[in-house]
Length: 169
Image 1 (cartoon, helix red, strand yellow):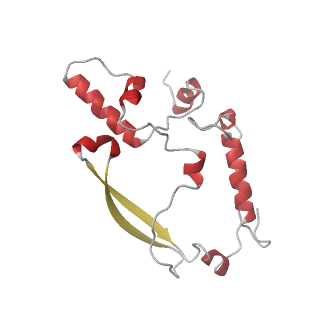
Image 2 (cartoon, rainbow, N blue to C red):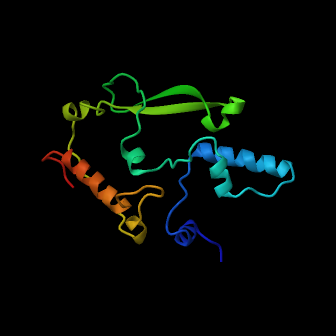
């Protein structure tokens, strides 16, 4: 029987892998070097121990809700106005090779952004579905503190505070 993502997650305690893309790039490069040199495959623990920076997880309570900030275009009167930007950076795990990464940002600006939500607010009709399955009682991998369900509940309460008396839930 083939394993689905769901059964694979059950076998790992319901946790999906959340290591950063930077670490995966580093690990792939090191595995390729080992294979090319005829060495045995390097374990993940060995890769983590030899990584030039601390291996972090890119999905956490803080990074999911508070750590994202992207420079966007000036305020618009349009309901929906996409804009694009580019950036380059050096991968910190590939620093010895000075590998440059190129990033493309896609921003969706609207008259409803920021304070505009109060000025141009239209009545909302929201339907909210909350996953209460067993995996929601787990904490974010590598994170102490709140469970996924507690974070989801807190996020919903934050959303509810933004609603007006005219909104429907």
